[in-house]
Image 1: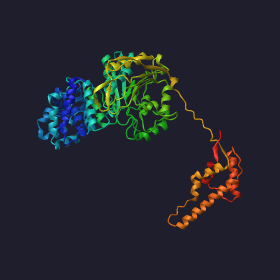
Image 2 (image 1 turned 90 degrees about the horizontal axis):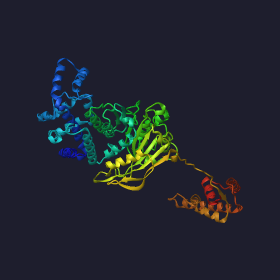
Image 3 (image 1 turned 60 degrees about the horizontal axis):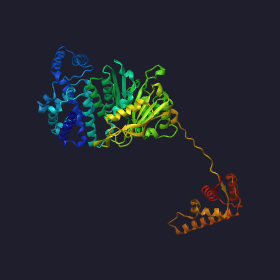
Image 4 (image 1 turned 30 degrees about the vertical axis):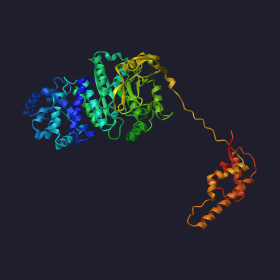
Length: 602
């Protein structure tokens, strides 16, 4: 992270501390994240502000309004942009400070002056309610004043889009840490995304053809890190590539940050849908009819999918393999593989089917790898993927790599357009030693991937061969250890066969076995009574029970000391003996007798 980016983050946190009192530290994010976005947009629009306002006055004088006015303003504001971004209010941050008595209403007016896509971002932040709270607490003027300082110049000429991504990432992480929330729900460490980008685009030489068009999708987009890193990775090597970014996010704040990032970079933001990707009955898949060339995701780890259960099961039952969840459903307490099934349903047809095919990179914990027995579970999902020859590689990552968990994680690479030498094969890569210790822990994150680790893991994947040595550790020291192993698809197949055999017993009314009847609870309960208050009744019931016990013992002793190896034959003898003696044989007592008089007999 660049020094100026670190300084900027520190400045923003210094400003956040001025909220102390009216806000708890866990609530700082409600103000600081939208204010950071607002200041960024303010800096972008400031140079052309006066010219746009003059054009706005001219258009109003001509009687333009509604959509016609928007289109005309968009043309004026979009001379250097593909996607319109403008603000028709007379305010900037500096002008807001010039009228301190009306700063709250003027700030609301300023936000309402944005073009619709930008307004929707602040609606998702629910920022107007915070403006009112800040004003009542006498903090609004102070916060805007602090954001107007030269040290917080967020103009793209000062802070690149790449660095702004880092700023958002670090702000979200720190504010979540203060709120004691799981930062991993919102973003993945930048170096993990960089590794995923290196892996998924390795071997795709056509991607670097000038003018090529490709689509990239993240169904759990968060703040948009995977999309922006992918875009940076490709355009650095092919500036003429035409990339379309798609995603979906259910957290309003993360959705707002993702869309603001795209808006700032002059990219279409309507491709980032809001809602639950799996479907919860209220929202659903935001891109139902689309397929994509590349897909990257970090689904939630170990999160149950009860909120989506009804919707998912209905689709599974009604559509089967014509829907997203044909192969089966995972256990209710971890829905990670549902997102993989969702992405698989969005693959373009394979080259042998006349299509371009797709590649997927997804981060999982160990659960999708190991859980589920043969049958409708994770096991069937794995089997379906491998039998279709889609599983390309699995890379085991170091532990303590994510902000919210110290567990080991794995990158799955899945593709329906494997090159010829990878067909029918799966590559396993051990990257658990490819890390360096961080100087300062960030939550549970104590390890990180350096550039040398990303390069080495990418090399191992690209070489596609068994490797007994690889470079690991901070200094890239070469160790003798199995780092890459190639397997046939069939090596992962297995069946669970349960062999059941009847319980084989023999029966004999011997003295030794009859004695074991006194260990059976049902037999002992014959000589008990629940009548505690009436002692006479209690004693009478106990005596009657003891008499019954003695009659049963005497009856069993009269049976011949024959060894029966057929249960049915012995039961017939037993039933006949009790019937001759006119003695009842309740089911619990019969079970007790059979238990006592039987032994295993192979």
